[in-house]
Image 1: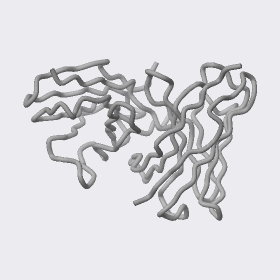
Image 2 (image 1 turned 90 degrees about the horizontal axis):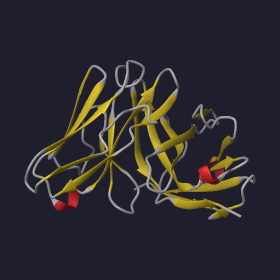
Image 3 (image 1 turned 120 degrees about the vertical axis):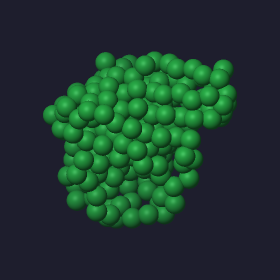
Image 4 (image 1 turned 90 degrees about the vertical axis):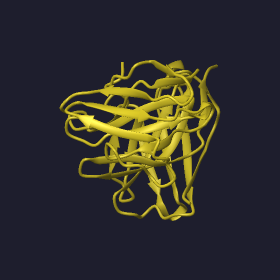
Length: 110
Length: 122
């Protein structure tokens, strides 16, 4: 049981837009910045979004992040088959004093 | 570009100790606000943070694993290590070492090792 809640899977057609939600509480998302990670099949995760909505160098602007209260959202526009991956949200939990992740969302580009 | 590489046995007997080392190259471990993490992922499942160590030696552990986990650092060798005691099949996972930036309300994993699969079985 993950501290952060994500939908197990989402899907959309190439070129379309998809959003992935991440729900938490006041002790994590409500009090700390959220990061998003992309894990392509058979590889290590990669940082996609940090501080709720900032992109590291090299991450295309098709990827965006937002947050409201205790929920965060990852948006991906112009979907490509290469975007098929597992996506994880993560943040610091001030009650647990631990880094916590969502259970992951598998994106399928139909 | 910072590089992290995990090393250690791929097979551990139940009830014994799992030991892994992460070697850091192309970067210094003595950098303020960066923490050195261990994260694991059971086959087909999600990510689980095991713990962090700062270059000074301060440690932070996942409460669910704290009683069995020890993380240590040797900055002279650019290495940090993980030890998990009394392992069971539930500890079978891909183990990643990583570098986390943490400051105030920010905590993000910027760099990941490729991961090493550890199987607990007799």
